[in-house]
Structure formats: C-alpha cells, structure tokens
Length: 385
Image 1 (tube, rainbow, N blue to C red):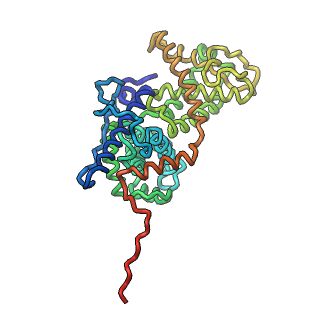
Image 2: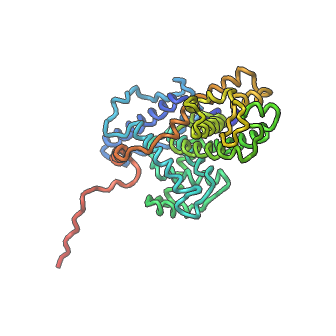
Image 3: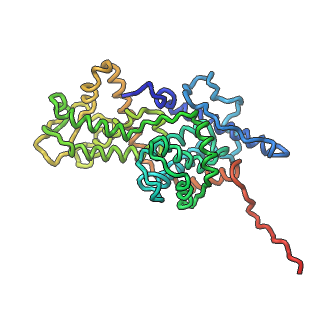
C-alpha cells in the first residue's frame, strides 16, 4: 500500500504537529525579516531572502533546525502580522482557486485539463509554503507558477500566455514575467522535488482490482452480493473521487498520509455513505469502517440494497503475500483513523468571509512583494495658464 521508495512518502509525509512546527518557523522568519526591514533607514539595502526548502525530510528532530535561530515565542509576534492560522486560511483559498485556473472546470477553455494537473499544483503549492511565508512570496504568483509547472509534470503542458489570460479572466492578473520568476522560487522552495502520486489513480486501481477480486471464491466472502458487476462499483468509485477532490484542495491530508491509504479510506467512506444513505448503516461506523469488518449479511436477494464491501477482509486477502498479519492490522488501523479525517475534511465548509478578509488585510499591510500603493489620492499639479 505504501511505496516507500518514492520521495512523496520518504520526504514529504509528516506528523500534523510537525507541519505546524514548519509553518511556525516560516512565519517567524518572515516576521523577523519584515521587522528588520522596517527598522532599516534604507529598505532597499535589506534584500528579500531566497526561497527555503527546510521542510523536506523533516522528522521532528531538533537537530533539523526547524526551531529557527531565535527562541521568540508566537505570542511575541505583532498581532497585526499574519499568524500561522491566517497563512493557512489564505493558502487554502489559493489552493481552491486552482480549480478555476486549470482543470476540468477552468475559467479559460484553453486551460481545461485533467483534475490531476490541478491536484499536482495544489501539492506543490502546499509543499512550498511549509518552508516559506506568504508574506515574503506572493501566493497568487506561486499558485499560477504551480499550475504551469504541474502541467509540465503531468505531460499536459499549457502555454504560459494562456495562464496569464486565465488570471485576467479571474480578475487576478499575473504577468508572464511574474510567473517565470515565481516558478524559479517554487522549484527552490520544494528542493526541485516534483514527485506526486495522487489518490485519484489509487481509487481507480483499487476499483479495477475489486472488480476482479470480488468475483473470486475469497472475494465473494467480502461482499453482500452473490454477483458483482463493474457498474455495481461505479457509485463507490464516483463517491471516492468526489471525496478526494474535496480534500485535495481544502486540507493538508496529502502531507501526512500516503496516497494508497487516502485512496482506500476514500472508497471505504464512499461505501459507508451509500449504505447510510439507503438507511442500512443503522447509525454505526460514521466513517470509521467498523461496518466493513466482516459483517456482510449476504443480502444477495435484495437487488435494491447498496453493495457492502468488507475492506478489512479485502486487505488481508490481497496483501498477505506482501506483508505480515500485524503489518496489515496496523495499516488497517491507519486507514480507519484516516476515514475520520477524510469525513471531517470533506465536510469542511467555506471559510467565513470576514475571517478571510481579516487575514488578507493583515497580509496587505505586512507583505514585501508587490507594489503597495498609498491610499491617499495624489493631487494633480496645477497647470500654468
């Protein structure tokens, strides 16, 4: 279920608390830079720092230096400066905007691409802002650069001029020059690591495998129907893809769980939702996969009942040759726990506009990128008659 040889697993999977530590360091460094810059008599002499990539392979050890060079506490940061929570709110906002820039429902027809392009861009964007702050790097420009880079990574390259047109259509213009500059920063900020394995592919792979497995002698013990066709699995597949799409752009789950486990958990949750939707869930499970632990009831006579798969039995049958029993049980517990997180992430509503505006207001006052024009109107000089 895990491909440990891939850098997405070995270098970009973290504990949730470690993700917070990384963002705290990036936020602290940005605050110290802005403070130093504001105290300088000539701000032009204080150069903007290069993009960092200290997040890669961070394991929570103090020797990794994520604590930074200062012992400054979060409470010491000016309340008017964007904090970690503000940055996360804005990051989620820009990740969701990727779907309007590039993907199946892009605002510009020439930027219509498979969902995996926008998904790759979202992953790259989140990796970058683990080591860097939106105060120092324009999240809008980095977002467009991530879309441009993702299109190349996924062999669906788009013309950079179309991306500029796409930003105009979104009323958030980013010039070609800005996109190219942001792409350089983005590559440095992710340590040139472009490996992205998406749960979309995993969901499809599991669906294809289940289609064959559930027809076997062992497979028939893991489902509540005597015969299973490909169409029987379609509702689960479609539901799992919808869940993955929601969590890909609105949460950090891709940073602390493998795509294999996310894909399987999404299918379990989709199956549970179908059962509960038809009144067969009996109020149990609630996304924790308990109803998938072997109680199938063999309701083969009810053609209207939702298909119910014993995913724990499926895991033990399919992975016994590759892993030991206790390893499979451990992976199962991880997937069960992940179901809770997927349900919560998929149910998360849009942020309150007042909170979003407050975070953006803090950013506008603190940022070091872009032209900060004075709000006061300049008086036009009088012409000599």
